[in-house]
Image (cartoon, helix red, strand yellow):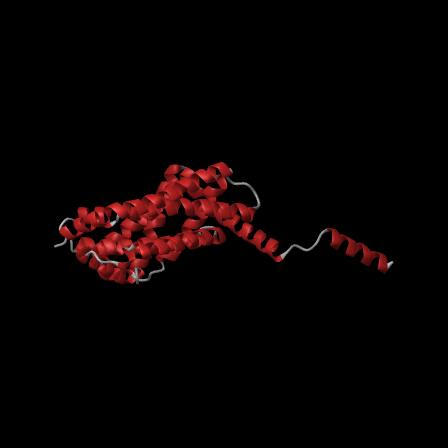
Length: 281
């Protein structure tokens, strides 16, 4: 009788093999992201609520960390923003996702720039690598020399950035890429805050200081990060979240903005530099 029971158990095990490690990991990740997305669901209830919440997600971490003199605002902002992006992706609400990402990054940037203008020492603490970036940009403005703006360096660096964005957006569902995005824009924010402090006209400094090509690149990566995070979420959950036609169109939009970034830099680099240099005190 015992042999019969053992044979039956072995038969059931053969029919229903134990889930693989990848399957268990995927189910666990799907459950975690589902819980996080549900927690963020109230943020996406209406466009008005999403807009207000996005401003708060962008500004409050910076203000809190400014009071504490810690650069953790980038990590905090990414951890708060990522579940909201997952909620939009689960609904395939691309427009709302773009609103949330764009508003959060804009509020974050304006807050960081304002802090750096008013209290450069605080900005220095919030963006540890900002001072080195600012000194390099100031040297470019006054002399026109910056090795990173040469195509031999610029091309491979941006190809690496695109590859990294693709890999980390898929594997982390956008969380790592969003954090890196905050890091990158904060270098520009600190640079702009310091630039305004030594410029005659702060409006001109900000208008040309946040370079058009940087804005175009930012938009391109916002679109690509959202789409790749959505695709990663789709793979994790095992269900279709968006049509491949819509994905192809959105990927095309993202790549298009990256091409505009290169075009604008090619034609406007020296024009922008001269305007910034002429505006220095």
